[in-house]
Amino acid sequence: MPALTVLTGAATAAYSAALVARPELLQRPSGLSQNQDSRTLTRLVGVRDTAIGVAMVLAPGGAARRAAVGARVASDWGDAAVLGVALRGRDTRAKVVGFAALWGAVCLAALRYDERRSPTRR
Image 1 (cartoon, rainbow, N blue to C red):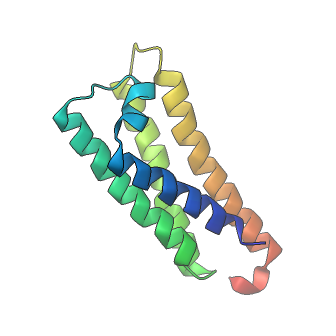
Image 2: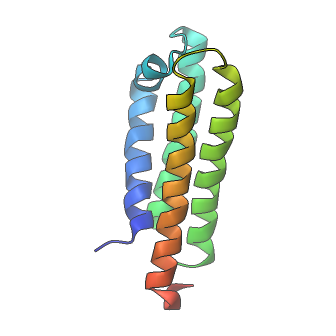
């Protein structure tokens, strides 16, 4: 079975690449405007997250993988904080912030599991 960080990285890369192609996949459920500026910013996030997801897939165990997952967690939790402020007063806020925070926690938990399962990879 592949490392959980590889699986969460692949899921991140796939979803993020989809955002680059179709920004409304994030904008519509978030309640964000769907204008050109918003599509551009969503695509920027998609490119960033695709790169991080690919890094999680390709990074060998140890420091490189921890750095890739750390970037993922920091990005997700940072997104949760920014969206928590930006979506204040909207009914989509809890869902969007919760999902971003949860995905960062899932990626962190995957790393912890992988490192406990294979301590020689550290």
